Length: 139
Ligand code: ATP
Ligand code: MG
Image 1: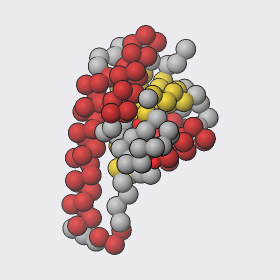
Image 2: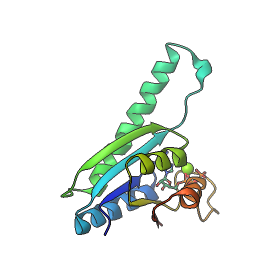
Image 3: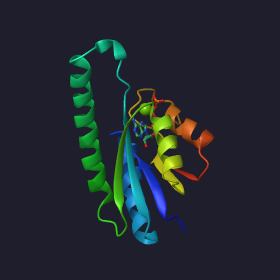
Image 4: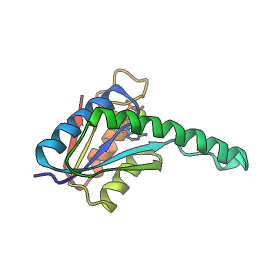
């Protein structure tokens, strides 16, 4: 049913659970997966070479999140491709979903945010509100 799914990870436990489910779904449906992680936007006032240094740190952190997510996903029969984009996360996720024409977005209900009372994080809320394909939220 789903052939070209998107999994969004931010380094949180919810994100890892979402990645495991994305792997299971990709295996059972023979679907391709786009793995998306967004890093915080960099303030332009930093100037060079600080801007490039800060970007390198962000990219290295994002690469670690990607590697762990790949472990959680496991082997899948279809293609597993990665997008590392500058945030905000919901905008990055929605942009990838549109450009890659994903048919399902999988993400956590919550992420790394500190407000424990929240049922739904702001990024999942935004994606659910604006996505044009189904969204699976994992708790
Ligand atoms: P908030 O960010 O509003 O304080 P939160 O961190 O608990 O709250 P969200 O950020 O909405 O909640 O996270 C929910 C899900 O969104 C995560 O489990 C993950 O799937 C996805 N997500 C959040 N941030 C990113 C990111 N930077 N890159 C990719 N996916 C993300
Ligand atoms: Mg968050």
